[in-house]
Length: 283
Image (tube, rainbow, N blue to C red; front, top):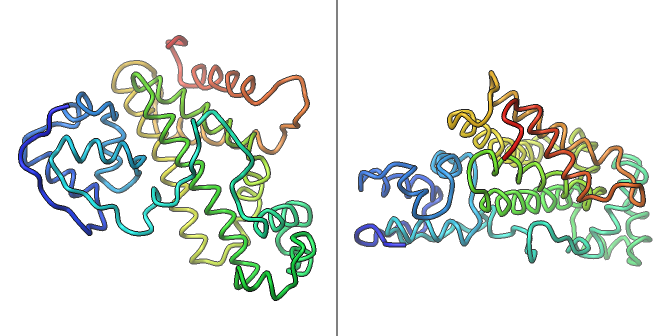
């Protein structure tokens, strides 16, 4: 990969996508030019530049290096606290602290409004004061659980997308990643779907922004597949909503120990996605 031109500093910027776009346009490069040298799809680059999506740290660094931009990620960016995993298809037990693990169990069993800090403390083997030492309120517990889940889903989705050979392949990989997350992280996924109404307005807005970024990732690749003539749908946005809704719903009905494992369900849903998007049905 050859770096394009001199290094430009974008240290401290709060919008890395804007800095990369400025560098790209200054060099007269198209999104496809950058994609060809970085293996990041044009759709993903477009989403990054407009602030609608992020990239995994290593991919972001790769794009920045190619464009000759010295880029510092802002503190607290989504990639800073993204989940760490060996591969996006591999799932270890959730990497959350014991207090959050206890809160997750209680919230799923009783519902957020039916749960008490006392119940969470008993489950965690702590005093109520001990819970408040880690988290200032029951709302803080819910927010931590929901944001941790969304960051893991986004990180796995970005890693899956970045492996794609073309737009349709990236759509299929995103479908697989979303389904696998919602089956292996069924409790977190159920909580995220059922307790949105329990978030305070400011926390709800933040969570919706994270969900919109996930939705935008799928929509961008569906639109790219339409443009490439790989699928035929009247609305990429509507098709992406249908795909994501279909994939996230698996958490509400799946039961471990049944005849199909998570990988079997994910493979089946990739086939459903291809049929929903229209011909051709092969990748």
